[in-house]
Length: 362
Image (cartoon, rainbow, N blue to C red):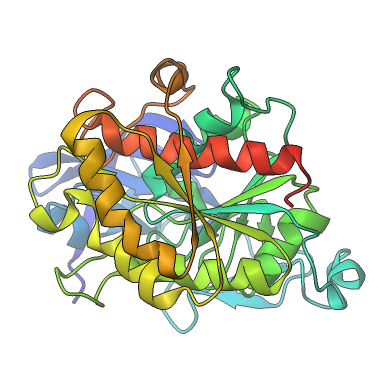
């Protein structure tokens, strides 16, 4: 189940908030490795490191790193301060964090009886790669709302450490995110919570967000079956937003460039998550894409109207807004021009959320 190796750090390649990318000598070859200093300390050139090489051996596109498990000769100090939430529980890498909703938290009193996000628009999407384009739509100068405070609520269906996402770090530096909330088994956000529900409440009442965006972390899991994909959590997030008096906005997963037929047009992930799992009513952002492909997307989305409100969203000006993204746009290895429909659809959901925020979510 785990491929264990020992390697030697050759150099530090680059780093971003919470993560360090290394060049490691391993069995006569050099490979990329990733370390989370908060978990294992900060490796230095010359250090021997214990590695988990499973993702590297499998050639995973999103997470094809050797992961640093320990620096045996230079262990980090024990953590100090409060924090009783254990995440990645009963795995070798279980970690304690201070949850915003736990008793020792300064936010406990705020969250103890909190029961509403006050009509806050909550944009829900399947993939982590939708985060940046949704923000592009939210902040677009044509109909966007650049003054909005936006929080990202990261589910645990993909990567567990929020530190894995370079996009999150860069979006915070650009001022496009007011903070990251990690929920469930995910950890490493600016705010930690136990559930999606308390994550949304923390986004509103701790971070002061006007809008929340909910997706999995990077590296979702799918099996090519109707129900065997981690994105079913998108439907559950719609329910959580609605029960907390939020305004769910469903971002469709749309592709014109995916080689897999089940993801061409409106992905079966969206049709299942929103059409079967989401029991609460959401505003589904249907992009007004041109031509036959646009007609196909509208036709595929139409059955969702039996349960949700379908909102046609113009995409004029969104191509330019996407090109101005402060982070590189990529989904399944495809950039903006290789799958423009995917990014336009996500940005359309952001544009809709901005319009809802302008009316107080009503």
